[in-house]
Every structure is written in structure tokens, then in C-alpha cells.
View (cartoon, helix red, strand yellow):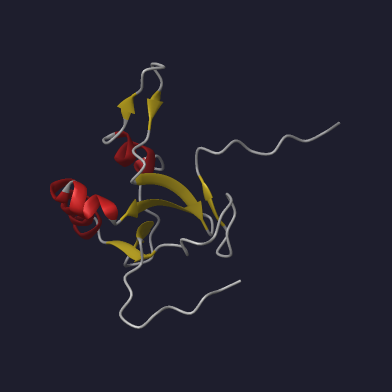
Amino acid sequence: MTQEARPGAVAPEIVIVGMTQSGRTFRPSDWAERLCGMMSIFGEDRHLSYSPYLKPVIADGLTCVVVDRKLESLDPSAFKFLLDFAHDNELTMRPGRDPNSVGAVTDNNERRAAEPAPQRSS
């Protein structure tokens, strides 16, 4: 199900796509995890967690990073760094998914990269 965008509405997410403007796949292949790892924190459980504002995903077979626009007001320098990273590496960007969609798989075949693959039954 697709919703119409409101005129002048700003998408709540920006997706940095692992494809350069010239059509090449961005390398190294783990760039999204590395970029998101820069803003990771160790929780009380001593496990590393990605920031809730920055997530690696696979969308249409491409590695991407979803940036929540809330980061722009919470940490402007981090937000600027991410946009500069995309610009400096000539990566394509697009608006993120509809905030009303739920679940790991969306209309545009996007899923969280860290999500485990479904188990096959024997």
C-alpha cells in the first residue's frame, strides 16, 4: 500500500544508497556496517548496538544506510558528516520508506541488514 506524499512534506528518513552516481557498487562491501558502527554504543548488557537514528539495510539488493532525520536536530555535526560522506563518495541518496509501514520487508523490498535469515525446516 502506497500513500501519497503531502506537498512540501519532508521524508522522515534519508537513505544513502551503496551505488555511486556513475552506477558503480560502493566498496568495501561492509561500508554500511562501518559507517553505522561509528555511532554505535555499548549498552548495559555489554552488547554493541547501532544508534536508533542510523541503520544498515539491504534495499533492492543494494547495501544502504537509513538515516533518521531526527539526527539532524539531535546531533547536527553527525548528520552533516553523513551527508558529506555520501557527497564525497558520490553516493546516491533518496527519501526513506513510509513511516507508517511496519515489519522488516517493505514495498520496496527493504530489510534490515543485521536481521537473521529465516530458518528452513527440514
